[in-house]
Image (cartoon, rainbow, N blue to C red; front, side):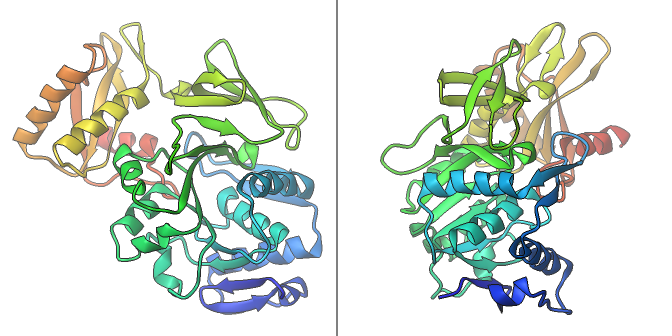
Length: 361
């Protein structure tokens, strides 16, 4: 049976896509999906990929067909993806995460069920359609867990990327019988190069690299990736890691996020993990992040940025608990509020733009 592309309920055969058949009424999102499939099936060799701009200025990078195929094969081999599986593609296919889902499907012979990147993509998928494989971002995971579609997580393999998943959400996944992995990667590595099992009998607290990849750390403690299928030279990252073994590591945070407060270097992601536990304890659902704001004496001061507003009593509770659980250097010197966090086009918090807005007001 020929592999199927089901795009927001419209069905296309691969032979139609290869011949250049397109839907003139397609939305811009649908058009990007149809166009990529057409180019891939025609055998085009060179592709331009767009970065999300989460950790810097958005940019474009080039990738070859061989590189994309090699990346897809690493994932397919690791997860055991099979022909005629049903893959749910609900990430923007203008970016590498969505594009790689198309490549994995096309190369493995999986049927593709493509929806707009909505909070709950299962709203557009028939309950009779079994999903064997999907890639999601944290806000989609959270939306599905809160909905009546949570039972769709009891079967299939799910990759989660784009941002770290909260401990609360990971705990909720323990009751789901599907298989969940956190991913580590970036546009430059053509999606993920390492996976972390989040649930099941033996959940992991570390990332394990895929076959053919090797890693090391530099003198900053940042990860260096050797991926021969992508590049003959090493990829030097700004990700601070703790090496567990030659093929395993724990992600600690970003070197370019480090806060230098009075000469003390502080990793904001470490503080965020503690603040998350505090918010859970106080039953607060506001989004937040830690940032270093300019300070006349310290250079930078640790600050807690919260989305929305909190009653004064709750703010006092947060401060008291932070003083109990954090060192004196890590306790935020100030708390700032933003009515709404600004986001990147791929749905991640744009911390730089959010801070610029706060400081202007």
